[in-house]
Length: 100
Length: 371
Image (tube, rainbow over all chains, first blue to last red; front, side, top):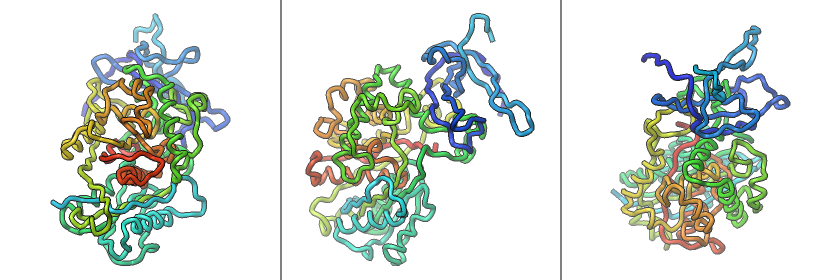
């Protein structure tokens, strides 16, 4: 087994919305039924590598599109019981200045 | 090897039955199947029982009679009932016994299934971060399929509307009220493009069949239904299937494609020879995709076929004539036996308000719950 560094940029291969609060466990997110907001999920195609599943963030204004360019970001997920911020990877719209 | 015939079918209705156990429903379904075959529980030489929620389906013998027969429990995701039937048929083919039953039962809590991702061979973070969910996989598979082959959301709704229409004619169905295409499209969005009315629900129910050596079937029935092939496959590397944190760029066919090809080959027939079809419609998109994966049409032809009402009960390619999972829900252990129950009724021509037909295809499906 060896680690392989993957590209941080890719294109959306498919996507959907998650519009109900996942059951906990296994879900460990901080939301309650009252605070839950739907989120986007998709598979991102990394050219020449593979397709990875990920949350999609930054699509508040327009839904993701298949083929759209995206870049990896690290975003806060929740605060754990020791008060530490837990971060997760996600993909968001690739900006002009982002050459990750 | 001995050929195998189905000589009796029975079903407990699917739906919600507070206060009634899965075992009680299974006993009723089994008595129905035994009565249909004209035999008693004492005549049964072996049994296979399937369930997700009940860890001892064999306990149904407490209600049917303690006759000491070998009774093997199986769990195999959404292929549980299909596996029970396959194993029962193989037991007869091998010459071990002449007559046996396959029984399926379940009683699920309300809502989507939840489990520990580690038990499914995927990392725990996949569940913790809200990715270990089956409905969103189905949505992402049909989203890509619609993009590639020009299927419209309207067509998803047409498939679901057919399910509810057929369910309304089926006294055993869970959902028995027809819904319009508009109502289905306007339903609460669960996972884009799938609304609440495009998904099946976990529910409760049981079904059973009696199988025997084909050469003795005419002792029990004038209309034996023969099992020509039953194949189960799992995914190969490169298939886009549920619970995959990643998958390779080079995509290969779904396990459904492998299983249906093997099944047609063994049966010595092709998709064009099939008169009535049951497909796993966990969601409306799955029915559309499975039409092509099982060889009943080319990818993308579904749009026109469904517009032409080809998959209706009276169409040339009738699919899920009892309402499928959309109208019946999915008690996992019983669902595949419900499909066989319906096919047997259709092939016997005993369903007066449904369609007569001449040849059947066993359910060919991939699995939703286990990879």
